[in-house]
Image 1 (cartoon, rainbow, N blue to C red):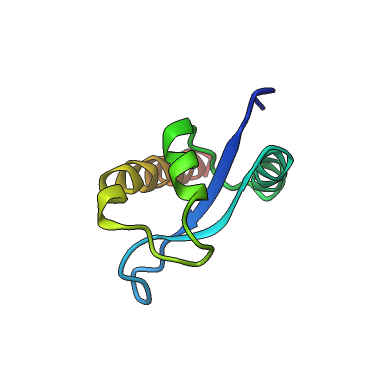
Image 2 (image 1 turned 120 degrees about the horizontal axis):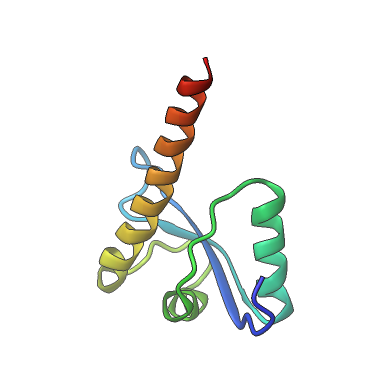
Length: 95
């Protein structure tokens, strides 16, 4: 983990319920470090973008991200999707 971590945020997207990804956790300083620690503990993928994290910490918890951040959020979701696909492919290769 970066020692100079200043901001962290977690987003969640439920395509059946949400119009856009939601901010489900965010914080600065020690809270940011705890968010990253918990993500690692539970195997949640971590995408590092300091500018996006700072912007997301300014949004109210459980709020949908604004349209201006859709492109950045799409990059995060694509990153997570690609990790999931690699993991599935790796599991199939082991069988």
